[in-house]
Image (cartoon, rainbow, N blue to C red; front, side):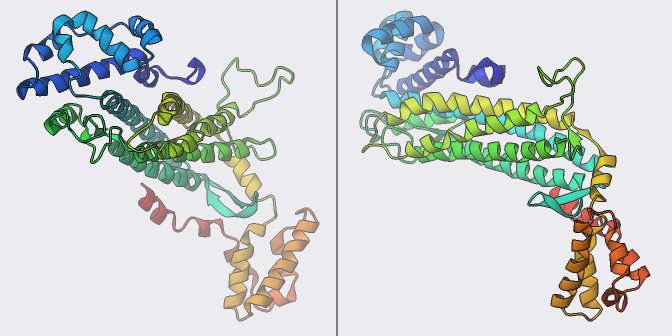
Amino acid sequence: MIPRYSRPEMSAIWEPENKFNIWLEIETLASEKMADLGLVPKSVPVSLREKGGFEVDRIDEIEKEVKHDVIAFLTSVAEHVGEDSRYVHQGMTSSDVVDTALAVQLKQAGEILVADLDGILEALKKKSLEHRNTLCIGRSHGIHAEPTTFGLKLAGHYAAFARAKKRMEAAVKEISVCAISGAVGTYATLDPSVEAYVAEKLNLRPETVSTQVIPRDRHAMYFSTLAVIASSIENLSVEIRHLQRSEVREAEEFFSKGQKGSSAMPHKRNPILSENLTGLARVVRSSVTPALENVALWHERDISHSSVERMIAPDATVTLDFALGRLKGLIENLLVYPDTMKNNLEKLGGLVFSQRTLLALTQAGISRENAYRIVQRNAMKVWECGAKTDFKTFLLEDSEVTERLSKEDLDKIFDYNAYLKNLDLIFERVF
């Protein structure tokens, strides 16, 4: 995590203070249930509630000696609690605390990301509906294909982020589990009701089989979900970057007063936000392979996953949160140029109507193979003359065309409204 790409609410989840507060709450809740069961004195949870505390610096100091973060934490807490501290962590193992706390942190982070996605969806819906009928050229392989609308482009991205929200909600549910089952997950030194109590209070579910640690396939799914969302961010960002190219200039990132695009060339207005988002997406996706490799642990557990998660959990969630916030602002302030879209749409002299011409010829009695040959022959003339003569003119000069299609027929074929007729259906499905 670096401040440049961090937002306070998400970063706070990964601060040591928050982590140790969760650890203390887990120990306190566990002691409450143990006291109810008569396993520890009833004064223990009271002492933890009234006197329980820690100092991060003190924990760090102790850890330098004991080389164990949970023991260092418990020692710091004991310095606050006093005599009752000997009953704290009764029958528990370190992972009971660490894994359950990580689940809480990932749940907290996931809930912020779901809210971020709501913001993206709101911004995309507004901009999509605004440009529902704004005609522009659709491209395949980067080459003009057929007309579409800018609103429909954005509707497709809206649908992707709607799927992303469902996946994120599922990932939060998947990771929201509690494991307080002892050294190898057998509850030999713990009553299972302790785990159930802590889980309920933390709004988690008891892990089915924890073996000491929560199975890492849950975490792998969580980080994979973050990566897919990051790829959807990049997908939209790359579209904006292409549309902002000088030769295209159909849409553009907002350029604020006083902003500078280049240290050398004062005229530059570069797509820095969408380029930045492409880079941030790569960082988020880089967490997936380590998360997948964490699934395979030795026997009931090892700690090969631990160092990985200390890095990827904050980095991936903080980075994705920042990226979603940046993307929301980019969408809201995006500059759209409908006139340029129309000019680009017409640059190839009507070639975008080639398929409609092909279909009309087949319906007029020409085989598909011959119709394709006729249309392509005329289309290539437009390419070769640099679109100085339009497609319809060449078609009207071709006897094989005019034998089957009149000028009025071609006028009907060359109609942009044909590409708008089913928008209601698509928009209804999306929104």
